[in-house]
Length: 138
Image 1 (cartoon, rainbow, N blue to C red):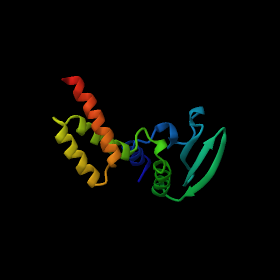
Image 2: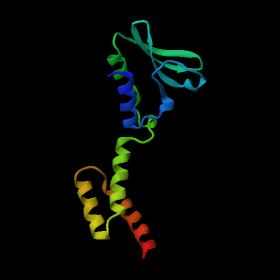
Image 3: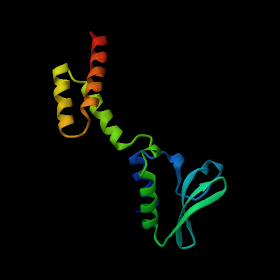
Image 4: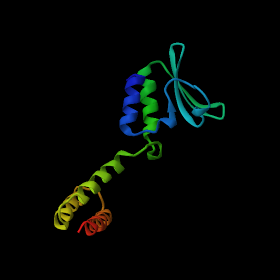
């Protein structure tokens, strides 16, 4: 993996760009940021805050450095604009709301619960939302 591929992978995962820089420190906007930069023939990763570098890690290859920072950035949901798990739940909610009738919506939700994609409590909340949306349309 190189930095261009890393950027695409981070975008796909929904990682907020404010949390990282793949070109070293460019200015004050990099405060409280994970940094990746090439220094000589090595790649270095570090956490940058208030002018100080912490947790420096050195890598012989761009691939290893990119893999390392990718793991760091995707480890915590709060680094993301959305997390894949929430995106999947949002998709289930959207499909539920778009169901033509409550029986269709409930059948779909029951299948999602059985598949372990949502909990029965979430399914109940989604049906409440379905009812609110469809009661306004009639």
